[in-house]
Amino acid sequence: MISRSTLSFFFALAAPTALLGGCSISTGSFPSGGTRTVINASDAATADGGDANIPQETPSAGSSAGDAVAATPYEGSPLCNASRSTACYPDDPTTSLFCKLAPDGGPYSATSGYDDAVLACHVQSSASGAAAQPICTPAGAGTSGSACLGAADCAAGFECIGSGTCQHYCCRGEDACDTNQFCDIQPTAAPPQTKVPVCMPVRPPTGCQLLNATSCSVGQTCAVVRLNGATSCVAIGSASVGDPCYEEHCGRGMVCLGSSAQRRCYQLCQTAVPADTCTAKQTCKGGLPLFPSPEFGVCQ
Image 1 (tube, rainbow, N blue to C red):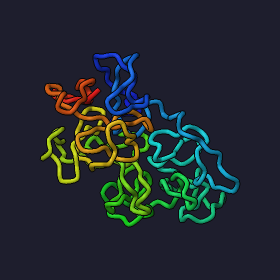
Image 2: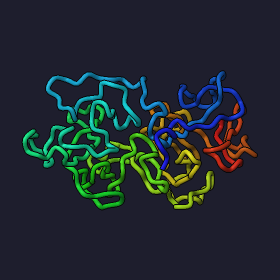
Image 3: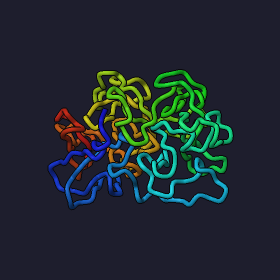
Image 4: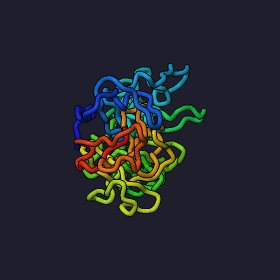
């Protein structure tokens, strides 16, 4: 499991250009100046623990702590809208005392003796249609891979996703996941329109072959999914080169790079034949740790 300090780990490539994860990117063109770096954006967390560009809101009168939007920059994935300083954090267990909520979800009583009872923190959509926010709820028993119908069936730190299984949240990034897992975007079981970052098993367990059409099942593509260059089959999404990918998967033959809401899709390529996938003004840039094999890289 990668420690939180590793969330800022990225690699420098030879040619000088700007930090790819921190700039606006358009298809086929990249800004110049500075040092070229690529950040593994399959990691859901920002490298610096927050994103000052994410709009902040002030909680409305009468709103509960669970419904309120964090007043400080969110930590990790913007899908979670979470901050450890102002609200429960989905990756972690929390307590009745912290949430001011009874273990069964009823009114909190300071004299009932259940302050240390564990509750679960789930990202939930509000009735008003506003962005999903973390909220304290009673904890279930389901852990990684357990069958579930909804969030209440999963233990603290886990969410019931659309496949009907509990999976561990990874709002802060891949260090919340086991070494044989990666941080992925999945819809919750209810409502399905809410998307959250959760730890999913690497498939196949030994990884897949980049740019190999037969390496994954129909509807999937092989992508780099961990900071150490591990690969896995992921769902083919609708995001194209240069599009944001913190909420939507990239298309076939692409990879999601950057940090937090700055993540963008990049075209995978073969360094020996960059013209096969890259534009005339681009080259195929690879290197450790994201591309252990010198054969692969991204068009830049």
